[in-house]
Length: 282
Ligand SMILES: [Zn+2]
Image (tube, rainbow, N blue to C red):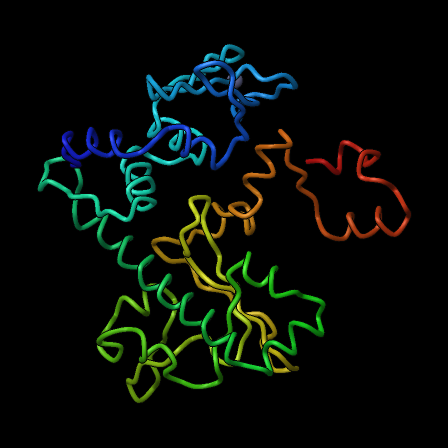
C-alpha cells in the first residue's frame, strides 16, 4: 500500500501541465491549456488542462482526472505503476506500507525476474557500444545507432559467464534460469544462454524487459534464439514492438497489423499505404 500522504505530496510537487505536456502538445487558452484529446480522435481541441485545479477535462469525450489518472489512462498503467512512474520522474522513491493488499511473494518474484532481465539488457546495451564487430554488423544491415537505441538493442559477447559481472551470486542464482538468461551444464555449472549474439530486448506494453531475442552475427546455428516461456514472458500474450509503437498508434487512432511478406509485396508493387486493402489491415 502506498500511503495517502505520499500521494498528496506527490500531486502537490508535480504540475499536471508538465505531465500532460510530455504526451500532448498544449497551448495557452486563458487560464487553461488546450490541446487535441489523446483519448478520442478529434481535429479541433476540446481537451483542457487546468493548472489551478490540477485537473484535465475533455469536453468531447468526458475524459477527466488528475495527473495520476492521466498517466494511468494514457500509458495503460495501474494506480501503483502510475505513482511509480510520476515519482520516478521527480527522482523520488515510493514508500510502501506493509499492507494487506499486495501478496508480497507473488509481486516480488515477477519484480525480481524483471529486475534481472533489465540488468542484463543494460549490460548488453553497454557491450554493444564496446564491440566494433557488432556495430559493423548492424551498420552493414542498415541499422542506425538511433534505431538500435530506440529498441534498446545490445550485444552478448561470445563468452560463457558474461552476466557474472553484473549479477550478484551468479553461480547460485536460480532466478537467472527461471528468467531464461542462464542454463545449467552437465557439470552442474551455470552459464549464459545468450552468447555471441545481437540482443533484442522484448518489452511488454508497460515497457518492462520480459525476455530477449538474440541473433548470431555469422552462420552459426540457431540463427535466432528467443527466451523461453517464463513467469513474466508468455509468448501468446505479447506483441514485439507494441510498446515502441504505442504512442504512434494512439496518435493515428489505428494500428496496422500484417505479415511482413504482404507489406513487402504491396511495397514492391507501388501500392501506397492508403490503398492497402482492408484485409491487410487486420
Ligand atoms: Zn476526449
